[in-house]
Length: 112
Image (tube, rainbow, N blue to C red):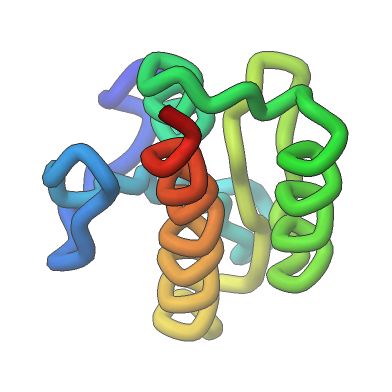
């Protein structure tokens, strides 16, 4: 993502590698916004050895995405669209979804 297209928000929530979760706010048309993780969540999991394509992880990921109405594009960028007036609610929902998805890392820790 070109960061000049939107605003980077650094949250107080941390991911499994100890970084603060960053999300990006993009203005769309007709008072709509898009929050995106720019692909960081699933990329971090993959780099930590989590197979997000395994049947169990894939099913868990899809359940979390559906629970929060979050979508994933072909490049594993997670995003959530909504109206500008609902920005705070959308932001909290999106952050919670990213935290829940990041938690797919923890079972991986006990495999070895």
